[in-house]
Amino acid sequence: MNARRPADVAVIGGGIIGTATAAFLADAGVSVTLYESGPDVAAAASGRNAGQIMRPPDPVLVALYRTSVSAYRAIADATGFRLPSEPMGVMAVSADGDLVRRVAAAVATAQPDLRVEVLEPAQTIAAEPLLGPGLTAFRVPLGYPVRPADATHAFAALARARGASIVTGVRARPWIEAGVALGVEVAGERRPAAVVVVAAGFWTPGLIDSTGTWRPIRPMWGVIAELALPIAPRHVLEEVTPDAPLLLHHPLSSAEALPPATELAPGREVPDADLLFTLNPAPQPPGGPVTPTGLGGTFTANEPDPHRLSRTLVRNARPYLPWLDERQIAGVRACPRPTSFDGRPLIGRVPGIEGLVVAAGNGGWGISTGPATARMAAEATMAGHDGGVPAELLASRFGLPAADSRPAEGRSAD
Ligand SMILES: Cc1cc2nc3c(=O)[nH]c(=O)nc-3n(C[C@H](O)[C@H](O)[C@H](O)COP(=O)(O)OP(=O)(O)OC[C@H]3O[C@@H](n4cnc5c(N)ncnc54)[C@H](O)[C@@H]3O)c2cc1C
Image 1 (tube, rainbow, N blue to C red):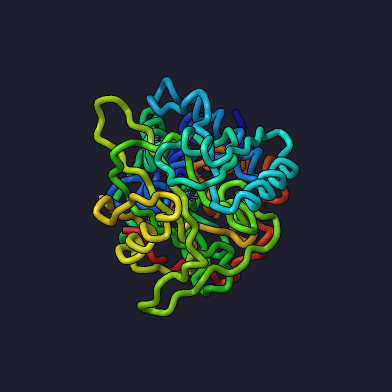
Image 2: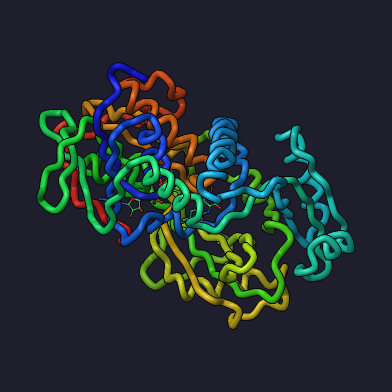
């Protein structure tokens, strides 16, 4: 128990980060109220993702991933949210066998603890019968598929069981006066809180700095076509590109500044070169409703037309799944990934505003790294300082919000 632990905390945002932060704070005896603008938690990225708990290549994120997997395993009995004991396996495929062998060797060198297995076309089709002929692959033991919203619902249930209050369907913003967060403003009403944690994903900077100068998180839109397939894939699948495969060496997790995403003019299609074939199986709990397989993936700065794009994704997938038909599209989901400029989350105190903590910016890895992010945010909230947050994750690395910040009505997910 920390002597300076705040009596009550307001959390803004009911995604994986907000719900897990609320659960950790409530477990420590803090009185927590979480505000979510959507009709339920997991209204944005935390409910519309590809559903893969996956080890990212960035070593800083790997540490968050490992702690997050342990956190998921620790809540299994209390919530029923269970990761499989073994990863499903990621299979990266291409018709260009030389390219596959070259990239497989590069991945093995970059991540020496990863078992990388190259499969010739006959082996590939035997291992993954959904694939068309003539594809070489390499396989790595990564990826725990989950249904997209399940992790967030599990942490929300845990937070409630530990006494946290979750209020949905209300837009909140920090109530800041003279550089001090005094609580939250909800529908014109001020509700005091000792500390405010902003875990509002992509909308986080807009709630902290209305001037638009502090924008360390940008949108990276992803569209997923939900497929009703006759048989479930045995692996997470992705195409091998000349640069590298998506999930194993993705630029979104590079420690360097990320390149800007494609900006789409109104009505314009995502260029084919920007589409990456990924197939994301979901677990099928016995007796439950069938969860569709997610076909991705896209990375654009603004929102594309998701329905048109879902048909383009099917066309783009045919070199790998030649039998795929538009009629197998059962639905579509789209959302911005809350992506920071270096691909790592922002955690801890917001410089210049007392009593304000931020936890957001996990990009395309938030389900895999969210619980660890939330634990650090909860600890910083309770300690009253950022001592437990590594320097490369501190919110302060992107500078200060404008001094006269008045939080704006940030666009919300509902
Ligand atoms: C297409 C796609 C595929 C992805 N695939 C994967 C994957 O396979 N594996 C993985 O690890 N990660 C994946 N991600 C990334 C992951 O989903 C995100 O990093 C993560 O969900 C972010 O969680 P969050 O809590 O920070 O934000 P969000 O989930 O966006 O939650 C923020 C919440 O704040 C709420 N909010 C906003 N403004 C307000 C306000 N004023 N008041 C109250 N509430 C507010 C929103 O409604 C929202 O519910 C994917 C993301 C996308 C979009």
